[in-house]
Length: 459
Image (cartoon, rainbow, N blue to C red; front, side):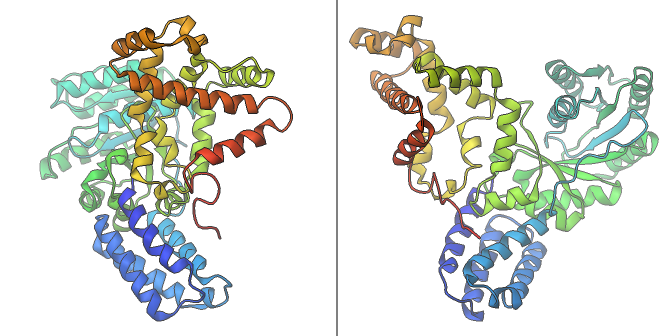
């Protein structure tokens, strides 16, 4: 998300960060560029006006004139105003209610409500240690009920059955009664969507809300609809007392206008964002971290949290011990590393959280894309156990067999073996005293400029 905005703002702010002092004239030109960048990102016009006004007021004031590096302070102001526009800090779900805490999901058809319920159920179960029951009150789409049942089985939470002959209010109230008897902590209620906002839909959802009185009413919206997402959220907020927003499909949204518009237009916080199709692809929305990403400063906190949650610590410890002992790094180990990366949402998901990633050329990003890693996994899977342990035996005929088995070319096999050899050399450097420092120096030489050390602006 935010690739376009990142690129445009990065170039604009780079021009001003080297200035010795800020004047009304050079701020004016930079603000014009910032304004255009936000409009191109499909940020709503009232939000753009307010944002530019706030930055200008602060930039020509006391804060800048006192600073020794005005250009960097200007970037700091832009960052703080981005945070403010998106809500300043993450607002968690409020589940402080007599169990079960009822959470109702609302939104248009196709926004990703049912999928988001599955993701949220997994999040609450694994990260918040809550017991969860999911129920569908969408009596217009039997497929939605079946989809929710499938998701509930996948993430291992309770599912309350319903069918199209029942009334939404009856379905939801029966599910809540069942949850009380079973001492379940949270009930997630899926509701019917429509292709557009209409009065019948609003009346039905108001009646449902009144009957179940949820502690959280979340609006699920597709981020790719840009500022329309904010306008739809406003229409729902006028009908329902929304408590927050889940922004979906952010991995496919290069602009990011919805994230910057929703809070300003509705006054409601974005609580989560969907970052992919997998059931664990749901992240709490942290405005400060998102502002860092937009300005190319990375998001190391989210990356660290992901590593802690999704990396198999036992396997990682065993591999580290093996490397430090000097027992060698095999293609089996390499394949295991690829699996761990996949568990974390893929290479690009990790890399976009690193500082300076927006400075990388597209050609370099292409070389570390997720398709490359899928191909590598296929190649290693097509090898025999002996070949994975002793890659030096992989010659002409073996390469042809592996290429045929993995649907690749012999040059792809050669490329993988070359990369593996480089990685093996790095791992050998880790053995013994001062090994980690040697390895980091070696990696720095292999990385493109801006990847290691000094990616984003420093304050």
